[in-house]
Amino acid sequence: MGRPGGQGPGRGGGGPMNARINREKPKNLKRTIGRLFRYIGKSSAILVALLGIMICVTVIDLLGPFFQQKAIDTFKIVGDKTIVDFESLTVYLVIMAIIFVISSVLFYAQGLLSAKLSQSTVFIMRNDLFRKISRLPISYTDNHRHGDIMSRMTNDVENVSNAVSSSITMLFSSIMTLCGAFAMMIYYSWQITLIAILTIPITILVSTNLAKFMRKYFIRQQKLLGKLNGEVEEMVTSYKTVVAYGKEEKAVNNFASESEALRKNSISARVWGSVMGPVMNFLGNFQYVLIAASGGFMMLKGLGITIGAIQAMLQYSKKFTHPINQIANQYSAILTALAAAERIFEIMDSENEVDEGKTEFDAENMKGEIVFKDVDFSYVEGKPVLKKLNLKVEPGQKIAIVGATGSGKTTIVNLLTRFYEINSGTITVDGVDIKDIPKDVLRKFIGIVLQDTVLFCDTIRTNIKYGNDNATEEDIKKATKTSNADRFIERLPEGYDTELTEAGSNLSQGQRQLLAISRAVLADPKILILDEATSSVDTRTEMHIQQAMVNLMKNRTSLIIAHRLSTIRDADVIVVLSGGVIVESGNHEELLALGGEYSKLYSNQFAGIAT
Image (cartoon, rainbow, N blue to C red):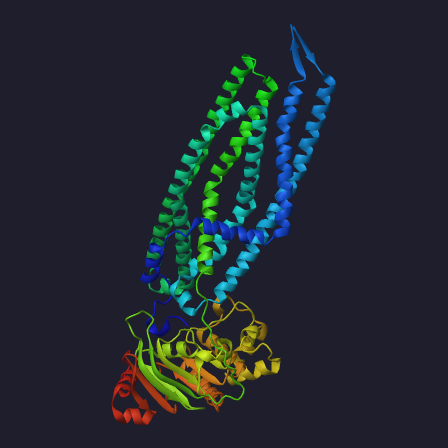
């Protein structure tokens, strides 16, 4: 609908939205992790297979040092001689070779399943997010930058995908390796293990505090990325306006400012994220020294530990600390994914469009009477747009709504279609409160032609059929003939099969409007709303449209919102809005004779003065 009634927050990068971003606080981390794992769990078959393979990989990996210890201990020094049990050594070496081959095959399978789990998870998440966006109220998209919403669908979902495919599977594997390595260390020497775990409290303390400090940078990074996407989206969609006003340099500077903020924050995030790895490596190496020193001391004292066992302990200590280092090195990616997941879940937690309508409504036999009774509405609390509005539209009546910008004309359309909900009062159609009519039923019998034409990247035929999926080719051509769009369509090289670019930019603005009118004609609505429907066409085209509209509006309740007063002279009733209330009502001649607000608007317009 564009900016509703010229009042609400509107689209783009206005102040209210920016204030919301700055006030936004991180969500509950545990809850986010829980919800993310529930999504992963939806691909249960892949997850079970992946866990099974990871367990096998971990067990085989842990068996390596054990057999290495056995192989080393086949060498024995007796006096001045070294005795080698070649038979046992050969067996252990063959076993180790088999283990390494099996490990490689399973590791490859683990990579494949990780990729499948990742794509299955984000497939479900992306579908849920898109479905959620389709159920959001119009007010949500009016109050959030479109680029930021798209960033959550693309960048944020991609970050979650990367985490699931690498970081999260690595996390599972690391936990299992930690437990297994610790068990094997206990098996060889509980005394050395106790010495080795002295570094664990320090590791936990350092990693916890670093994590708390780093997390704020990664959450802010995702917000800034969404904001930057919003800048790009605005620049691309508004490019003609930017160029027309010579604001290219300003647009570049704004982008550079947002990009610089993202650059600085990303550097801080990466720097602090990379600190974790070296710190964990240092603690791991310190543990390695402790084990080597204590193991050597015990062997020299004859406390029942062999060189092979010390070597195994050293390898298991590495396997014990390596997962911690892996987690530390992946921490930045995990934080980015969690911050992205929070942003995705924020949209999913938003309230759906309310639809309490349950009344059975006979749309086929409706008359089309519309009544607004004592309707109050405001986009922003404390700033009313409509005040105790009372308006009755008789069945088949053609009523025009005029007034200065911001008087509330488009708001009436927003409320009738329930794009927004009224604060108080009632709106009825054929005596039935529209709150009791299901929204899909309500909107099905209302046809709208907006000032801002909406066309899709598809053929002209498909765009027109958007008004009625069951329409035949004959129906489509009748609709275009009624709206006088057939003339320009048939002159196109590919006719109705012409592919439109984004928003139909390969057509003129007037041609796009004619297609939108054709779509409304094909929908054959019981109530027709024309919101500045002819404002974008030339006078000659407007005359053709007006002639077509006479036939289109027969036996159909019609609401016309117009700035160009010449288009509404033949309206049954003209309603003049000012400050959210109806100040005048009557036909063209009556209002001119009255000499009031309408007369001033009419005189000013035809005197060439902008209203």
